[in-house]
Length: 368
Image (cartoon, rainbow, N blue to C red; front, side, top):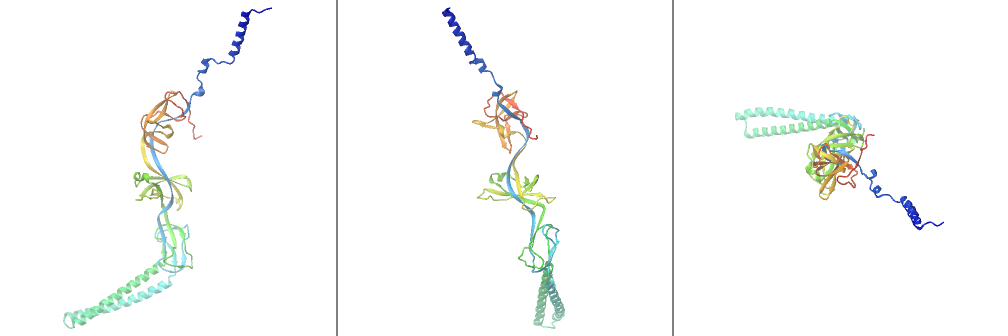
């Protein structure tokens, strides 16, 4: 049986249409929006509060008051009254040098001073009688002048004897080596039985009730710091605690090699937790604004014509040009372009355009 030619062509066209229906996507399906193409962003509220800039440096702890003690007389050491680490009061005995020779010297000089005093008194009495005779013209001018010379010599000898006695008494007193300050005996360089001498360092006493930290900072902030400013300090040996100190000295010179200058910070140490030589990490506030609008640094973008940010309103981002104030450690001060309560994009900025739809992702809670 023969199939009509017209029917044969209709059959071929039907088969072709069915095969194409399995491979071709309608144009409308290609233009349908997909949620996967909407950018995800993280936002943060514009806040009002302090913005500050700090510079950090590393220094060491030292005592505000330190005494390096050397004996003023020489002799054999009889007693050592303190050891390293012992607390020391002002005028407390640290060590005693053998006093025998100094006691004998004092006895001798005292005897000489007594003899000189007796001689001076005798000549003074003679001079008094000579004065009366001279006034009555009973003795010559020469005799009277000789008596005056004898008195002056006796007075000089007495003064010398008194000075020698005072020196001997002072040396005897110096046999007892005492602390000029209250503090802690941090170093001891002598032992009982050794020969002490004035050129020998015997003890180091440190008052650690108040300590100082000195550190170097870059010259660019030299003009920004003032005495009385605040320094925030942490210590490697006490990582769980931070301290606040006062800038008491800004050294007047800048090192021409390192381009840095030195500052001194004083802080209280009531529990004596801070010890000399500890590593101190210092943060010094250079600039600050107490109450100002600010955003995280990650929200600010530098464009060809200035700085801008993206805010989010109803799942749509808006590009806003802003004016920056001071740069803080983590924030930028914004002086114009935003308002308190605006929400700015901090993460997911790549590829954003003005009026683009976005999906806002919740900021992860860092406390979890």
